[in-house]
Length: 217
Image (cartoon, rainbow, N blue to C red; front, side, top):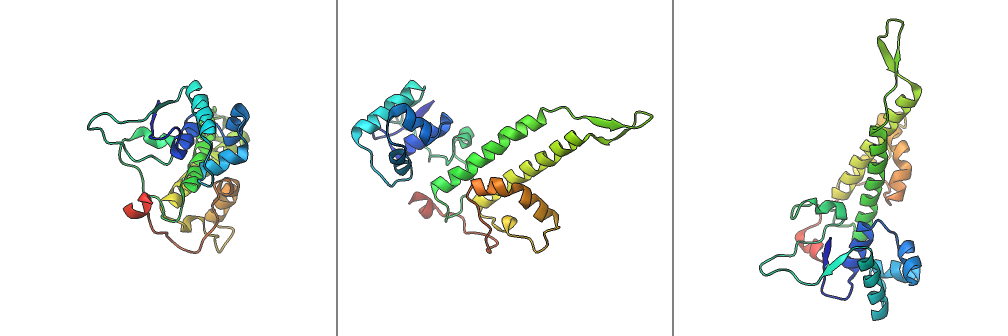
């Protein structure tokens, strides 16, 4: 896997390498001896690291299999960086992102989607246990399977809500007027996931999508 860059190690390089290797800042800090606060501030654009720190990070990532390529082939256009490594499936076409979300916020939401994906994969692989009647006609599912199905549909719903929140639809997470609605039940089940993604309820039905000019800033 190759990351294009012009510096010894840019913030974009650092961010993409961490995501691709499925590491967190604490993991990198422990392995390189660079203070975690330095790395966290560097990742969010609040600190410039010394060249020796950048070189140490570059060496660490290269040892893990990351390749840094500082130039594009003749005539090759370097595509805009995707907000998350899993989006690199397509070369050009990504999805619109709300103009009021920064890169770190988008990354947090997409990381939570991947967390849900991992659990969804586990649930898909579980065997469905059916309750049958006296004539072996299926009557429903055993309690464990029933609970697994409820969790599965909540996590699938959660990923949809998380994705639509990033693309500009905020009213899906607004508090319902009636807590007994299906919306209220699902939102309660998703609360921990939404909190980890940094999503709070809002009053606006939609948010403006990022324009080309905003995305370039």
